[in-house]
Amino acid sequence: MMRRLNKELLLDDLLKENIITLDRGRVISSIEIDRFPGIFPVYSSSSQRNGLFGCYDKFDFDEELITWSVDGGGYFFYRPKHKFSVTNVSGILRIIRPELFDYKFLYYSLAFQHASQYYDYSDKAHPSVIRKQYFIPCIDLFEQQKIASILSKLDEAIEQTELLIEKYKRIKTGLMHDLLTRGIDENGNIRAEQTHPFKDSPLGRIPVEWECITIGNMIERLRSGVTPKGGSEVYQKEGIMLIRSQNVYPYGFELDDVAYISDIINNEMSGSELKELDVLLNITGASIGRSTFVPEKFPKANVNQHVCSIRLKEPSQAKSIFVSSFLNSPLGQNQIIQHNAGSNRQGLNYSQIKQIHIPCYHNEHELEHFKNAITKIEKTINQYADELEKLKLQKSGLMHDLLTGKVRVSHYTDQKEPEAMVIPIHSKKQAHNQHFEDAVLIAAIVNVFYSDKYPLGRKKIQKLLYLLRRHQQASVAGFKKKAAGPYADEVRYKGGEPIAERNKYITIKAGNKGSIFSKGEDIEKALAYIEKWNMQSDIEWLDAQFRYTKVDQLELITTIDMARCDLENESIPVSLFTVKHLIATNNEWKEKLEKTFFDDFNIQRGINESYKYYNYGT
Image (cartoon, rainbow, N blue to C red; front, side, top):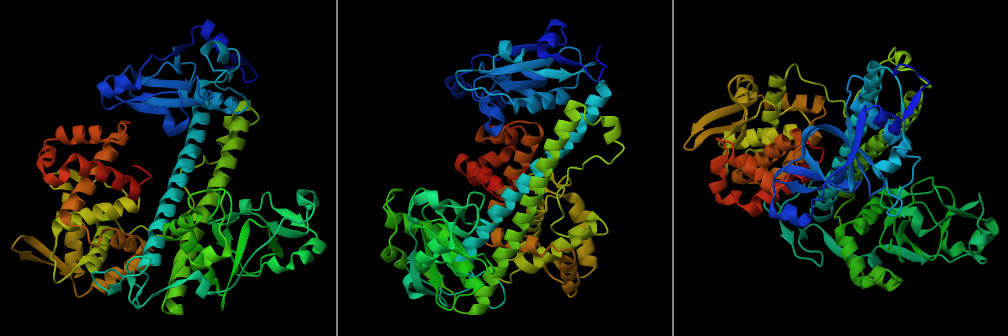
């Protein structure tokens, strides 16, 4: 019965033949969860956060299941085997005869059909409703599993790419903050008050080389447009672009719904016609403060009354990027909010825009550094975004072809299955082996973090190497739970450390409080590998995040991050309670909870830090 390609059965048919069961969860209130907090997830009706409602000290299931949102739109979720519960606003689908159906195949089939279903809070996805609406293809179990495998690999690639986009967006945010508040010195390094002189300014502490000026002092003119006579009725399908507030975004222009006007109307609005490198700022409405700039070779365009064009004196691409980036940053947004008095209905006028304070780099060389750093990371984000769109289109097409029988999996698997990969933005080459790569990384860490004033010990080296590997999304399996946090014996005794010392990348000497690491006479050879393998940005990231972080804090962050990885591998939600429980039940780690820097406040801060640095999980 289950081998005919062209046959489909309703869920109702599978129920009658006792192949599946449909059920509901039980009532679990937030009050009950608060009374009995635990480590086991409770899923509810939301489509967000995988439906997670809270964590409980009990569980109802420890098996593979499909659940769906009864009250929240009918979304389906595949639940791998783990300990969990679901509330009464969630449905439960259990396969009784696993020799006939694969859970993941069933999930993808249901999710594919869900795109054409509609539920709301009055028309709900009750079991009695969906059993009459969803059809399941009757194909061989092996073919089901191959289809599920193909689609799972694409889902992994999509998830990995989304996480990388978020990762680089956070890196960009941190980089922007550093460049807008500290800048780059003549040696290409981010300034810090510990190493460079700073001064007070209306924007806070800034390098002494900088000035703090107002936008009014750096512009040639400000100009917004008007609504053309006749309103939206005069808009055309082609002609001169009319840039409106919905077209202005920090990353550039969104032109899907751009309006066009005729040459005649554009001539009537000639005073607000745009030029290359004009900075644009939304001055009214909910998107007030959003800014971008007009790139070179941009088509002829104008703006309406909701967008102000800022024309700079002696404009350059670097200046336009800098000004628009500043306006989009918290430093710029805070001033815009103050001028706007917190009301979306108010608007910025020219006088208020001119009063916005902005840092002024002391030379064009530093401004060019800013432009190059921002455009480089934006290029990376855009490449990943393009790849994400391709993966989603590929998945959509495959779901249609494979789940409707248009393409048989036996034909498809003659080709190579999609791999859970994203485009290789960096052409980093793997070293001869992990041990040699670690030797090079340790040398690079010593090169950056060594100081005559503050000795660099093994504990700090180990923690920094762990954090660097996590940033590179490399394996940290060699790090074990030790009293001082994650520690890799192989790195010390047979891996990177002895190789680095033997190759004279570093020197290791005995000190009063343990081994002291310093630069070796051939450290430049190791740094050449860093350049060759395109790891310089990884080292710069480590330096920017942890240069002034004390060893105790590194122990806290790495311990919490390793605990988080363990919990995620067990599908246990990460929380203050679950992290403390894991530490308390580990013989090597349990004494950490007696340390002052492992109190509840610092553990929660460590969790936040882990997600800040590594939102892509394990």
